[in-house]
Length: 178
Image (cartoon, rainbow, N blue to C red):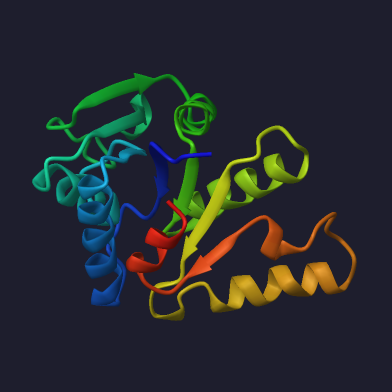
């Protein structure tokens, strides 16, 4: 399946490591150059703002989906190609999944982890079969990846994690898959 749109899940903060924002901006530029639409949570703060702004700066297309309750907290982005304000987080996530051909996970907090695990679960249950990439900037997800492999070793998963997710260490590695 050719990837024409990708859901980007990431933090509404930039985190402590400057590499997180650097990789996010590199990713936005790479996606724009390949005419891949970025679909994300609609905010203008943190890594969310960095992915949107870097994609737009490179003349890319960005679609934001944000719940009303977060439009102020995440500082809704008003310069996007398209923005949809929805009632709930559940509707937001469902629309993000429906509009994307694949997903990439960047550093983030609880919300990002929620989205990662929902995507992995939906893949496991055959609700969708979208590619899931994890951008492991500076080893941010090393512990999580190790834990997922521990779940597999203890026979709690239905398929090997490497069949469900592809771990990348740099944004450029994504180019081999799109």
